[in-house]
Image (cartoon, rainbow, N blue to C red; front, side):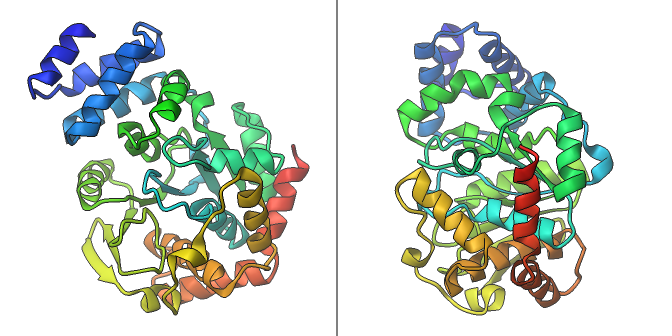
Length: 330
């Protein structure tokens, strides 16, 4: 690691193979915590290159447990995290809306690192038991149309660095890796990013996969469609900026979509929205993200039709039914 750090301190970049091997070494416990923290810190001071990110991704995927869910053609809605906005768990709720709308969902998530409350914190508080066996994951998909993949159980390196990331309290390149290493290998992903540079990098990497994708970036720094300002939407056909009223029928304020300061508060907000007891603003934000996924995946060619399908999923109780069926299996 010393030679690697010296190279980085000289403002040099690493090859994809260098980064793949580093990730394998992290997983194997070849570096101590000080070395890993120093390595991560370098990328807090400069941007990661596409080649470096691809190498880290390849290393994680090489070691990952296989969820073996490709036959389900699952979808995922995921944000990189690290936007510092402290919203409620919008992407996870959007996944339940999509499950209620008839889509098979494999949500990939983690505990909060740079942000305090991640999807795994909320799901665990609500009673979900993390699991890795394909049979158990398939049973959840067959019964509830949704399953949840807790990232550290599938990726040894993420478990190794979890404490360091928490202690640092900053967003790191590991935030960028999460959406790229879903073990379910989704047929489509809606990915939220917190800055334009990350959107550019993701677009380049995802174009190579040949799969449909949609990247969203709130122009005021959110890693999701927040409806607090305009949103940039990128897919394989190009990019476009949408206004909040166009995506969610209204503009909301940051206070409208706050997630609270404790896991219990976040879980309470989550259930209220899923039961159809959320505020107009909370619902609109969830609908917009779910609709963009339905639209981007090609399930609805018209965005407004996708939006009303999301509304129907919540208001009919289908989304909450998916949640209850999932929890009954725990």
